[in-house]
Length: 560
Image (cartoon, rainbow, N blue to C red; front, side, top):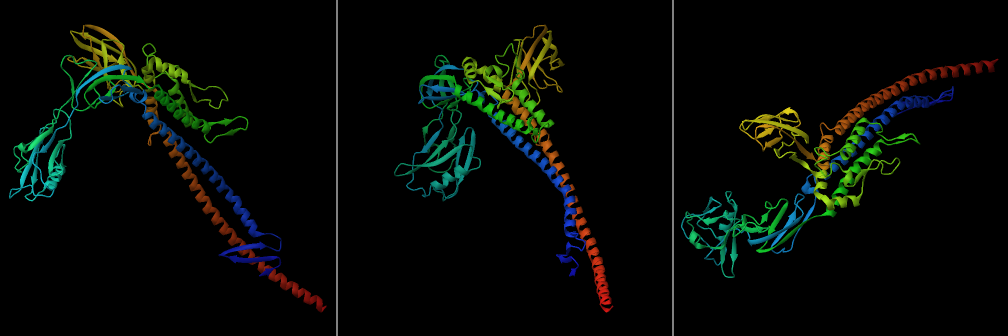
């Protein structure tokens, strides 16, 4: 419909205006009004995205911290961190591996015999595996005793050798015996093997067996079970030997695991694997630096451009940054400058780059020459500052550190005092707090509610008097970081996860505002179009009146 300079139409239920006689474009006017209102939604969307970006940044940081914790868990004991090598000059007789707590040096060995398991084979064989082996008309029993436990197997009247093997091996009460067959080219024989080595791993066919051809007297022992026997550094003297039930021996020399292969003699040399330890230190540094760099990137501020990172000034990140720096820079918990060679990481070659503007500012640097020198002079001391994991001792022979409770006892340095009267403990404190003791005992224990809770100290001197000493319960840098990272990344109480949850809540609340505004603007646009549609109708009527009046006036003019 043409109304002066006005055209109006309806598309998909909405009225659109291309212009009125006054030159006003109401369609554009409505669009502009909606855009003005929409700017508020755009602001909310940008605001929401900023919180989502912060949440993503924290997730990334949390992931890096979890990765750091996992890495450090692989080197949070001296045995894992302080790599040692053990070389045997007679590997056909004995091989060895060394843990971090093995002392550098040499040991001689002499092996008399290996540990062996029991093996038995029937003296009579069968031409086929499917031949009937039970000549009785009824079911028979095959019973054996292994390591003092008797196992009974019911053998059907029609059983063959394959059936017997399967029945023995699948018996639910079988406690370590393996049945199989041996073929000599003509006949098949039953073999029984105890799976354990050692003199106590006995295996005998019981007298209660009723299966013909498989009685105790029908078996021949092909290998007797026995202990391994060896001497280390000439000990024991005379004709005595160290006996072990297996060929893997790890409880004779601390930190050294020996695998016996045959009889013979030789020497084991234990040394520090400097390259492996340096590699561990480099991994420690690179993983810690990765977390530090991430924090640095998220909080940096360019004073020249006045540009700040997404989390610049964030209190949570400032706290994390401080914790990470303090752990690596501060003395080790429970270490004593008078009793420990190294109490921090700086003497072993690690330092923090404090140079302003340096590309590695705030990151840990390594002086590898220094590290290798200290490893050569005292590798164990290096291992302690990096990986001592609740390593305790006392400053006096009057007392000995005995134990602690994991997750309860805190590492640190504690004063110890106790009084003896009549040969019995009459009073004791740990860390200045009353300790638990009993008059008929020689131990004192840290009481609940204090950092020393669960710590047990043995009293070695029960002569009347009052005695004092100190306990050093050490925690190296790797386990200290593992402990702190475990708390920081905790899915429920960790600050990173709490911040993430808070940011998600904020984002959700902003989305509610966006949804509300979107609905409000949509309603407003609908109302505007309805109102202008009515206005269009009114203007249309007046336009028709104007046209009619114009026509009448023209007729009057022509008539006159």
